[in-house]
Amino acid sequence: MQRIIAILLTFGSLTAAAGDYPLWNLYRTTLAPAKYVDLTHAFAPVQPVWPGFGNATFGPAVAAKDMPGYIDKGQPFTIAKQGFRATAYVLPSDQYGTQLDPPAHWNPFGATISDLPATYAVRPLVVISIVEQVAKNPGYALTVDDIAAWEAGHGKIPEGSVVMVRSDWYKKWGDADRFTAKPFPGVSLPALKLLHLKRRILFHGHEPLDTDDSDDLEGEAWLMHHNFAQAEGVRNLDLVPEAGALVAIGFAKPAGGTGGFARYVAICPPDWPHGVSIRDAPGAPLPTQPAPLRRGPDGVLRPGTDP
Image 1 (cartoon, one colour):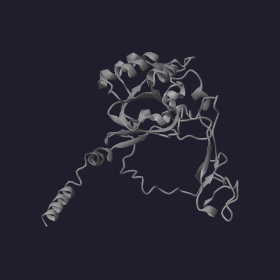
Image 2 (tube, rainbow, N blue to C red):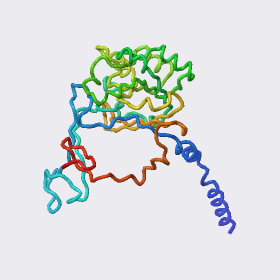
Image 3 (cartoon, rainbow, N blue to C red):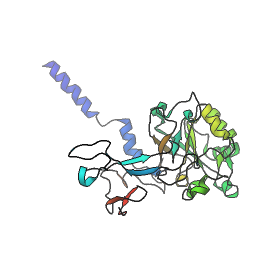
Image 4 (cartoon, one colour):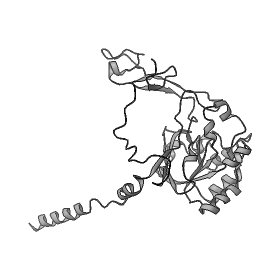
């Protein structure tokens, strides 16, 4: 009997403390009311890409073999016949769209995308603007002085943070030829060395698809050969604060991958004027489309597109 009473008392104390989980409380009090801003381009069949790779193709996934009474080999899966549909993507490279480059992209001994630790998930976000400089010189590259100016206003860059370089170059994404042509904004090698060796950041990110427009891509070469990663092709940095936000980092994990199709989301203070809160967009259930989804000539599903 005494043992039963002891068990009941222990259970009661555990029940009383059941709601006291610090991380859940952090979510409820801080993350739920925060504003979320997507920093990611959706990848598509036609978009800016290094010309050596070319563009992707989208289309319906088809049966790989005959399945008698269900589907014939080579036929697409459809909602009408099989109850579902799927899409096949033929991607020219893992260097496509908004991405996360691991060292293996250049370094014969470098970590691949599947080697990156789970600790990449959430980090402090620093945004350094070079918009005014780029307006005068499209080939402008972030300098050590630009970093010093940011720190004069916001304090020292946090160790382990992600530093995104805002140039507003992403606004040219719809003009693929101009987006990828030189000159375009970059990050200087001295600035990269300061960020990684002195401030010990996790990685930096930029809006163009290369670190700089030098002939030998000296910045990217230095990063990869010194075992640092980087983000490329980010967007919407004009919609997030220069300091005080977090960034959530998600990426595909192909085994031994030399690049990652990535998604970056800025988590901003609740009073920030841009973005949506979880209250605004709870995510479950998701909204329905305004019209049935159909594939366009490019293979992309869109509401009401002609078959």
